[in-house]
Length: 233
Image (tube, rainbow, N blue to C red):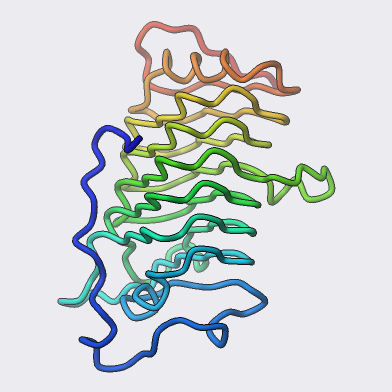
């Protein structure tokens, strides 16, 4: 079930080996949500299976000998809100891990977003994920989708068992070559696969062809390998 190219992580340090920080309990959750900003906050969440709110992963990881090259949350199965890895400061300091893996994650209730990240993140794996945005209320459509947008170093995204999303936006990722959504068969709203100069235009068109007939489809300005693309105004 694990996608091709998955390397796995050596694991985060045990909290007993760290200078400070108890195991995660409810006191670390804010309205059921959690934010990972460094090695300590990542370690606290290693054994969590369900997050009732949103999981945020910021780019504030400390650039030091303890910098995480790989972040793995092996026990996480359900995030009832969204998963958001993004640079909130749009250019702020810090570096993301090179690889983020959710080996046993099956369900995300809101959006699955990695956006506006500078150098650092290269690979994202969620090989067991089958569904995102389980509530497709149009009034909440801005938080219902798969968004992989404007990530400077991201080269691979593996979601091989994902079947349905509300929106799909794969845009402005300059080095992205692999976007594995081989089980995706339905997008309820719009599809945008645009301005990914190293991602095959044929693969982009194949994804668009497989997801039914969403109201709007834009596929253009990807790597030209002989397939027609079109962007509707």
